[in-house]
Image (cartoon, rainbow, N blue to C red):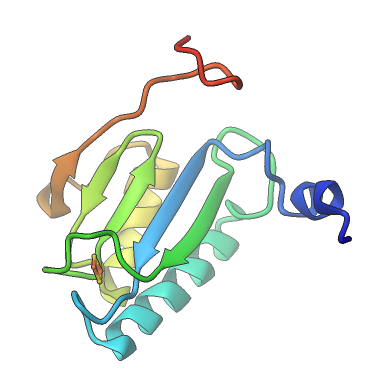
Length: 127
Ligand code: FES
């Protein structure tokens, strides 16, 4: 049995403040577009030391196969803010990382929906 607590510690699970999900599914963008956006997201987070780190800007990233929007992709959502972005090609990723993740200002012209999550306690109860 793998030591999941050790894996979680290496991934800094418990330390991040945001989680970015990027859909690279082929119902909303081409495979090439999705993969390029994912590589750009990884590169930008690493360049700004936002991934696998501590501190208030620490961010976790996950690529997914479908967020059920299936149009206007690549689709990206940031939690806990619940900010949904469309058209997040590789060209848009650096500005998104700088303005939303570093400066805390969503890039409004690319946002198409919002669903902020409540600030729950670790056991799921509302804060
Ligand atoms: S394939 Fe991207 S949202 Fe469905």
